[in-house]
Image 1: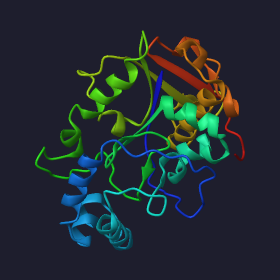
Image 2 (image 1 turned 45 degrees about the vertical axis):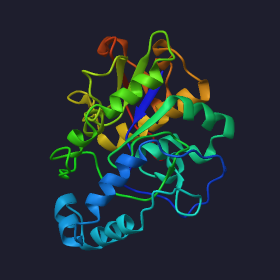
Image 3 (image 1 turned 90 degrees about the horizontal axis):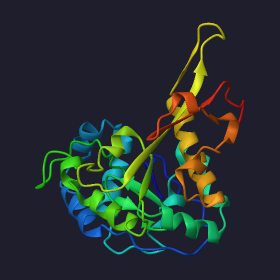
Image 4 (image 1 turned 30 degrees about the horizontal axis):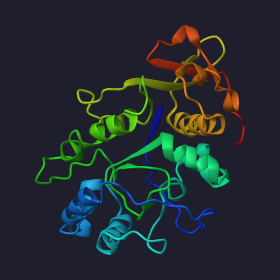
Length: 265
């Protein structure tokens, strides 16, 4: 199985990585092409395009200018350790051992607006480029058109080793849309995480973004720790109060629910 997750806006390049092992990103030619376009944009244009404050726009313009086609331990960091948003707080990769990270490397794919697909140990230079950005290039008016079927072809190559390939979708809608389902050959199983909202009599289960993001990371950690190889085994996930809800689920949509979130993580 391959597990797909989204990247994060927040990055951590201050904490030194606890392992030295790393790999080179796979789509550097496409990344360089996008950087070439981004380098032509002023801070004001980046601010408008990405709806960023002037300070954040300036920071990212500086990142684009500094970006290099050579990835080293000095200018880059392993992707799974560089991202630090809610998904990555749940995954908590800095506490995974080298063998666990090797397993993640073989089974986890991080979708990215700039890098296409990153493996956990791929070196990544800091950036901000969300998949939903309407950045016009020679390939089209947005990043979905830019990436086309490249990501799906890559996932097909990765999944080809399995006799019955399965992709576990733990990415957001914005990022999963970058996967061309017409090209994709593998079965897709999505995991949904719902929390109870409201009073005991009139409340209902719903997806709460912050909790769902963290749960996606927790699910990846569960898969890594247990080296999961079948969809059935995903049903055993029970981190932080979530439980598989068979009645609300379908073969391609596994629903996990909890009645109350922990007070602190």
